[in-house]
Length: 411
View 1 (spheres, rainbow, N blue to C red):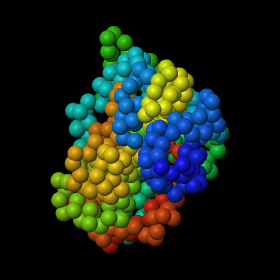
View 2 (view 1 turned 30 degrees about the vertical axis):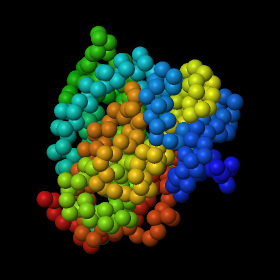
View 3 (view 1 turned 120 degrees about the vertical axis):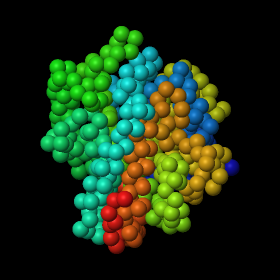
């Protein structure tokens, strides 16, 4: 056993992820200290319990009585307090029974039937995005391609008019885009403006219900209870973030990973029936949400370590998805990997990602069109130098330059 890891990164600092998640460090922790007690400047006792193996990540995720989401599941960066931005009021930050009541109501807007009905619209949106590049042979994979589909899908679902979308997208990018050039004041103003916009939507839908998610949420009941306008407005903001960031980065990192592994790219391109299985592998290999935290509600034991009530526990999904104990050859892509019990949408329990099915169908359609319409698609330069988002939560690229020879008409 190696006693220390040379130059161990500080996992709470966004700068740690400038060149990607520290897989070498995760591997060392899995082998030597799978439930590690690391320093953190903002948490009780200045400590953070870091859980890196697949089995223990599942254990924490599924034991909602011992490990709570409150006050929030985000890892403090040591500079700003996430709860100060109202994250402690989001559905993702609540525990039973409040979380389950909200989830039962919100699920009415995310039924498999409702998500499946989006298929034709998603295909049309995707082809419109690609058609907009038809007179070009180069682009930014992030901003010209991957960014737009999830933003439009969420806007379509909640009922944001086309005329308002540019403004809503701008607020979303400022509030949740992890751009270090955006000041705290600009981010706060954008969040306020988006909240007020959602408030106006709620007021309108209360009197004029439509066939959109905002109307469904306003009028849905579970056990005689309805969501308040405030709860819907907070969910609107959460949806703009969670509904766009995860899918955007799945499309970006997944496409790049396939282009870097041309044998895997060719396998999927030659047999599109493999796309759903390939998406699960890309989610495992390039986990969009790096980690979430839980807070111990009682004194407990995990992996032979004694954790006290009130201490934070970090579930590192990106590490669990590369755990040799759970996956064969975890650092390699196998688009045919099956079964693939990855934890990219969470590791089970009551907080499993509400939008997992939506992300999957968005990813399937986008990958099908990218694989079939772009001829000679390739990345430009060295991916190791591509700028990444400034975040300790999301593993994604800020820019990915791509080129192609031509774009075929949609099938």
